[in-house]
Length: 226
Image (cartoon, rainbow, N blue to C red):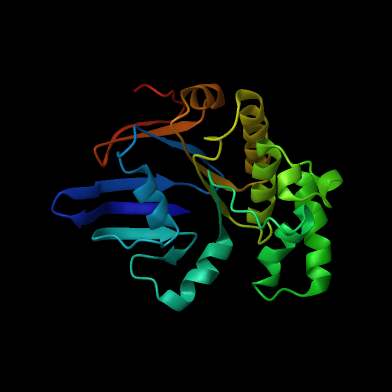
């Protein structure tokens, strides 16, 4: 499902994002990527979604060879990869259901499909009852659930979450983790990038630890040990 072989990313002589990183993630896995700030976690995310290109090495994601992916193919790749960031980036003048529908509209989906998909994904994250609310009427946890719903509209094979609970309290964090586990049970591969020790230790999933751009640990059922 996800394969990185000897991947290196060099920004300049004084800035190296990743150094000779090799990772294999199977379909349906739930993997936590951990490490301190500046260890290469964000670089890894950018490479997975083809926002950055590797300096050296080979990357495959969901059957796509994205090492040298063509610019025109990137939108098709990203329909297979749901991406969630710490910043919600919701459209303030659109309701919950309009924010989610917008992701389908820009992809040119038919209205019949939009009317079918939006209620389903909002139901998965428990927000159908808030469908007519605007972002500023929602809590931080509810806004992040809208983002998750939006990331699911294309039925992605992979969900990449980069510090998705960084702005949330412990209660909302636990709710978001429960949603991720439910999505994973549907068969979606989850890659969770986080520095939240409590979340990682409670999940008891595979944990890959980065330090100084290199993998220093890969535990099948691990904890945050830094």
